[in-house]
Image (cartoon, rainbow, N blue to C red; front, side, top):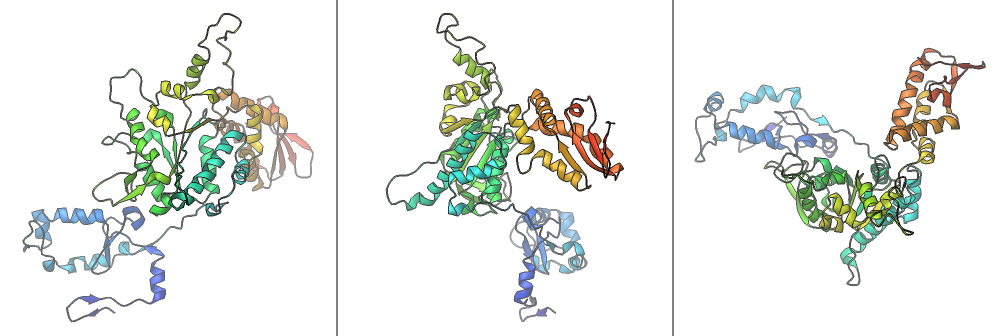
Length: 481
């Protein structure tokens, strides 16, 4: 039971260490809006075991200036501060019934399942080990995987030496710019890297960024995501990785009289982050306001990886490469590079400037490289070789129904050819498979006697059905619906 001390205050019962540890497994809930501490920020504790978030507390203070509310709460006497009630006159019995409400109890924290890291970055795995781990998930793109592996390795060597270096040589960081067609694996490559390494990584989308003062996210929001990924640990966040996708959408708009609030101005806003500066970042939110606490993050040791498809960049490269005369023995034909799959690897700084990227921005991304466009053989390998390949996912689904799913080589080639014709890279593989697997996933559960299904090229091309083997029987054809 609570006891009243000599001063008239209520002393709560002292909790044992076991009870205190048990309370740590729960998070506080706002008495008014019922948001948890992870959603609304740190709670304010009031007498009687009530907890209120900062937003609701501010709204309550603002409401004190309303005469009707003051009369309702029987607050007639005020201190010298205008509009601020004498809290000694506040009748806590008004909240007595509400304090017993189950809505005010603490809610258990949700346990977040974090992916298990393959490497401990503190042990600095060699680049070939990082690349070998990426090979299990990402097919092809050997040069890109090599560049990223070396960059991450050098980045954390640089972070380790830093100010502790015995000599006066200061190693500068090498931010990266990935250029590649859609569906070539830019985002997937970085996401896979984040699962393999025990480092905070923030994935941001450049399309949501706008100039400060306009609707959208400020450039500092990418650091807010990194801080959140590091569990609000500033030191850990300052050695993390930020991946900004769709960076080509920030290209300077051509021939427009409107203010470019999501293009060149955002590039200029990102300059200080890429170079290294101390930035005020909101904690637990992506936008600044008076109710959100701020902290300072130094971006000097944060590795930035930018990526974009840059549609239309091939035309700029071809224009430059075929600029010479088209007549004579040393002439270059206009269609020489029309079917070149590695055309993006020939991109230069001048091509990116003509595309719309400002030179100051390009200069802060010294490591610029391109990913190859996927061909048929690479798409076939993507279907079956990675640890989480699409075919393995469907085989696992049918395995739960005790049915074996197989694909012959001709069927895999047909899937790759169909995906290649859609010109959306590896993303087209899933859409193709979803189409022809629909009837199979619908029909198979109807018959418990089906033991095996073989997908053929004829079925993919709508010229036949899959070969179905019944349990203890011969082959039969299952026609599509």
